[in-house]
Length: 592
Image 1 (cartoon, rainbow, N blue to C red):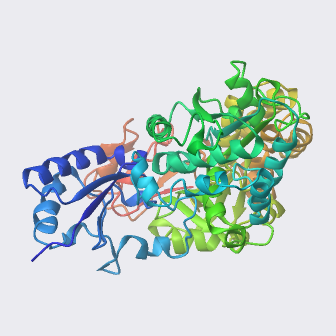
Image 2 (cartoon, rainbow, N blue to C red):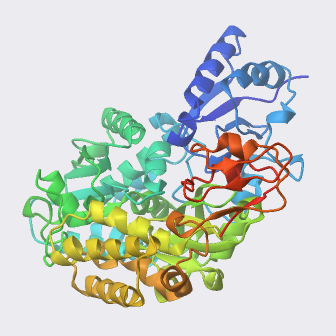
Image 3 (cartoon, one colour):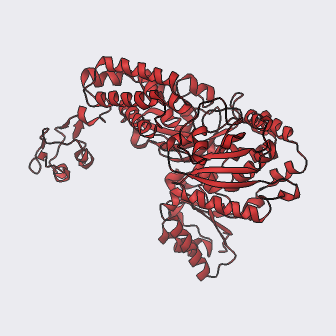
């Protein structure tokens, strides 16, 4: 049978490369060469999105979607599928036992890919691949005769709001920077993505770096800047490598540098690596870092659009915001504003993680509900457990409880229930999670990452963390809960920067929706979820069959018993490591 396989796409984003995707790619190179299959094009791509099924390989035009591929599977795929046209059924992604093509999977059913449009389907290391997918058409269009004010009007009419967390109108920000007086101006791309569990910006830079570079160039033309900076975390080596390749190729082809496309417009882009400080995601702290100063926020006003880098007008947008610009210019502002809601047009990229089956990168129209993301896209909660809450906005965001699972996702709706959009981290939690412990985790993170410039953060966050630790260890009082509320409110109203002002949000929302858990920790000395180790104990029930598996797995020999007889736990020795619960085949060990 003649094969219909003409292209092979291998996901080479960070997630898949950590699972031997480069070895898979190398084996394809070798096997295709050995079999002289020179007419088959092999392409390394960015993230496809469905990270929980990686490494991913897709063939076109037949649309075979291979998941959890291993290096040793390559020879079978090449010999059976590429050479003989017989897909390897055991490796194909299936729903209800039936193989489905990549974007026909339920995971993508309610998604709308705009910022992620090229991720997974083009070669991020090839400018030719980018040009074949309408790359640089937007820059050509505006340099052919679109005025600065016309570009700003297009962005304004689209309704695009900053995707870095604050949601400020992008067109208005561009207008401020364009109208600010000054001969020297700058454009900065904020790629300092520091939220735990967030990987949206990283994935865009790895999968479609040219779109960000083109958009920054358009922004430079619009505001009158000739220099741009991409501030990216040093922990993103693959994103940095692909940015370097893209910048070099853009320069070689005349899309960067002097006299771009013979228009008389000059623009260059430099990469600056961040050292991993969470606070440098705040735009003025980021500017200080580029200038070689301590990465701590500045007092505003003046805002960066008036006085930013080196005291000059500076436009700062994050990666996802820039990733939307070229398509808005090519498709028109009405096309973009038709998606989403009136107040929050367009789409939003989320890093979907935690207790959900389909962990991955998703892009959805604004206005979709949290339930749809968790169940229709995320595939629900593993192991038959129940949804308890979702954390949006990272450590500065808030918990959304089950009672608000049908809340639509847009800026205003999330704010109303005490959460926020943030840059796009979305962590799902099942009923095994303790909300007090969650708040403590985020406060520990914020204490570690605070710049310490202002007293509300430097002192207040430490006090909040100490109280949460006290409560989770069973030493708390009801007065401590009241103090948590007072401190949270004080920091929210008096911290010097937006990161500090939003840092108590996890405490405020967990107190708002899960106060019973705080009170149980204090009054009953009990963790309802069974997660706070100092408040739980283990019991072996009559369901024990005496298999001795728990006894053998206990690292401190706290379990005793004979074969086929009920075992017992010495609570004075038990370190509450949970190994016995994991080992028991009959679920005979319970936590209380």
